[in-house]
Length: 110
Image 1 (cartoon, one colour):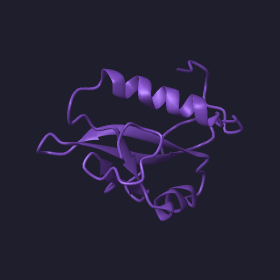
Image 2 (cartoon, helix red, strand yellow; image 1 turned 45 degrees about the vertical axis):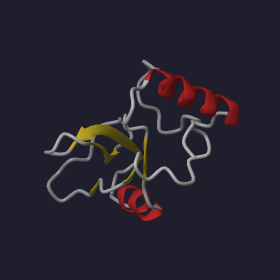
Image 3 (cartoon, helix red, strand yellow; image 1 turned 135 degrees about the vertical axis):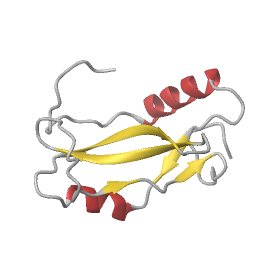
Image 4 (tube, one colour; image 1 turned 120 degrees about the vertical axis):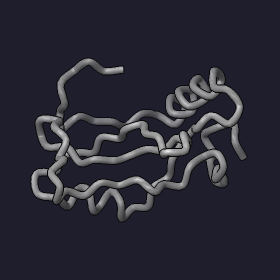
C-alpha cells in the first residue's frame, strides 16, 4: 500500500507473478462467497477519463441496498481529488466475481 501523494505520472505496472501473488494472497484469507473482482467494459474507463480535468480513476468498494458488494469508479484530477460534481460521470454496474468469474485466470476461480 502506498502512502505517497497522488502522482498522475506514476507507473502502475507490475509483473504477472506479482499480480497473481497479490490476488491469491487476498483470496486465501477470504471466506466463501467473498466478492473477489469486478470487470468493467472499456467504455466505462473512457467515459470517466474523457471528463475535463480527469487524470486518473479511483475505485471504491461499495455496497448495494441488499448488502451485496460492488465497486464504484470515479475520475480524479491531477491532485487525486474526486471529480464528484452532479454533472460528473460515475461508473458501477460491473460484472462481479462471484458469480461471473469466467475468464478469471489470475485467481483460483475457473
